[in-house]
Image (tube, rainbow, N blue to C red; front, top):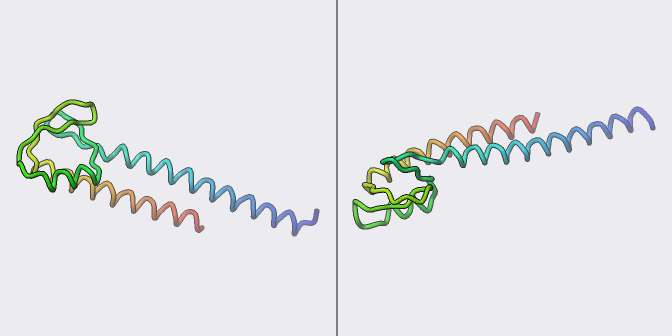
Length: 109
């Protein structure tokens, strides 16, 4: 095998490694971010999702009982939890976006 062929193969192997590392790191980042979406409220723990946000935004009553991630009924003030959940969700997603962009830049190097 010529030196040129060896260099070409090494470059391809490196590109495959970087792509694989990117996908692995992307998955690890997503898993960590999903964990960070948990929000403690009134002795309960809620995972902030778009479903929870939509439910809280449309529910007509200001106070209700909502099941937390540990399957406990927790008394909540809808507007209060909605405000906290919106802020928390946006903060976590902003962090995710920023870290994902950093991963993409590392991949391009």
